[in-house]
Length: 103
Ligand code: FES
Image 1 (tube, rainbow, N blue to C red):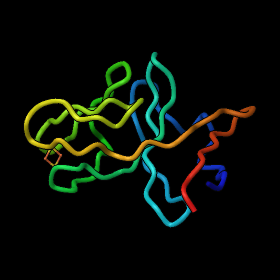
Image 2 (image 1 turned 90 degrees about the vertical axis):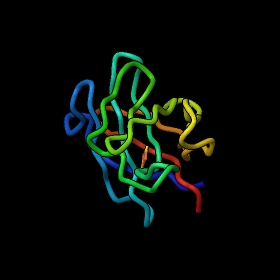
Image 3 (image 1 turned 30 degrees about the horizontal axis):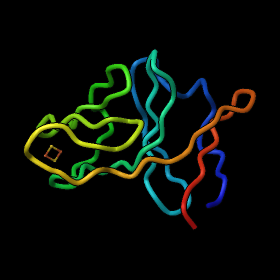
Image 4 (image 1 turned 180 degrees about the horizontal axis):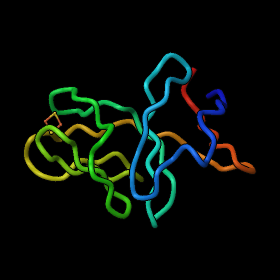
């Protein structure tokens, strides 16, 4: 794991998400009342980008077909896919969002 400063906290919309390049991957930062989460920006169904999907509590809905993923575990809900998305440890230090990504 390697720590990456991915974004400034102010870059993250409330109840929304934004993708950033970090460590050679597209990382999606999501922010809601449930907290700040970091996941891979790729749906496990048909590999659509998850950026722009609706964030509600600790969940994100894929913008393409609407599968709901748990941002804490990556687990999908429903029948379209059973494969989880990757989730990454995230922390906020001052006004910076730090994500631990696999090497
Ligand atoms: S590509 Fe995400 S639900 Fe189909």
